[in-house]
Image 1 (cartoon, chains in turn cyan, purple):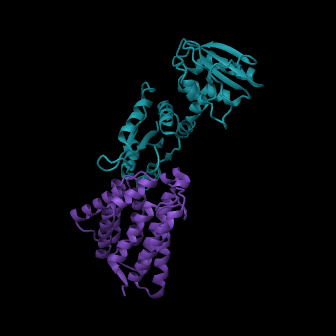
Image 2 (cartoon, rainbow over the protein chains, first blue to last red; image 1 turned 45 degrees about the vertical axis):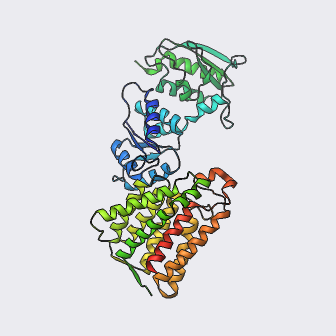
Image 3 (cartoon, each protein chain N blue to C red; image 1 turned 135 degrees about the vertical axis):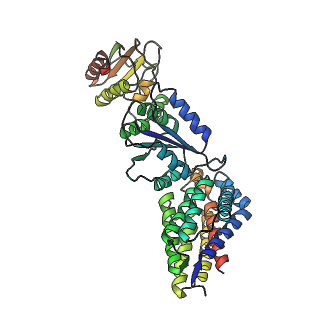
Length: 242
Length: 212
């Protein structure tokens, strides 16, 4: 499992962001170390502290470092010069601090690789951007109250796999949605939630869909039949879970 | 005519720099409150204070690299803001390039300062004209090398560097910040001196004072 390092100007900010993320993690959590504040209670960052945090959670799987802003970046880059093991894989991510940390910790707890965790963390702003409708460079989002079934396809599916739409199942659906030439959304019929984009595993996880819940998959575009069939098959196969 | 600087000169330089940032603590913070987060004076005074406390507490360093490694590590852990990794990297590279010696001639001092400059550029990724400490540091080292080439007088080179650093600092007045928190202000950052360039000017004022 990869290690996670959280670099912040403020110990309170770092701890709160980690606590928020850990609410999403049941079971094994990745090793997490916080390097926040400088000196005695000074708001700031300390490269020596960052280096110690990296070494604390280091393993052959690598370390992903989240930073809040400004000097946190420079302190972390300097810290890399202090880390004793030159072969240690340490990645600094530009992921958003709160959303990225949540997405990254969830993904890391599932045993994902450094590359996978970082990709997920960096994409973590997409769900927020889509919900607020400001993603000009994003594919059009399925918006609340917009019945995307009017000119497309829709299917209701009951989740029978043990973990519901947790990280791995969500990422399988997201992969299918991304691969298709279609705009696809998923809603949780139990909670009556607004549909979310199917191509974002973070957005899918926000549905809170559990075993026994029914989800509605809606899709428009040339690839709609294919993606509906693919997601139907994934659900029927219980996402490969026992 | 000064041909070289000793470990004692370099230690005195650090003390003089501490004195200048401490005396001008409120002024640096005032500059930083105009275009930053109003902590540069406090950060530099605390950082250099910690450096001098540490120098006074332990055994004196026996070589230049050891002295500046301690200085750099103390700064990165006590400053807090971006000046911590920036000045920290400057002194760490300065010491590593100077090596395990007790005296630096003009060429060795120039090489150490240049390595420090390289560290600041690598760390901050700023360019000349971005309204940062680089706008004082770059001209200072150019002037140092030019003066040194004339007659090898380190003291005169330090004086030239101090003059150039002050001019570089003054030239940041009209610049629009493109790095650091001041860059969030855009055009509103013009009309203020850059706090980092101002403390860098003190660094060379301190060197010139000690060697003068």
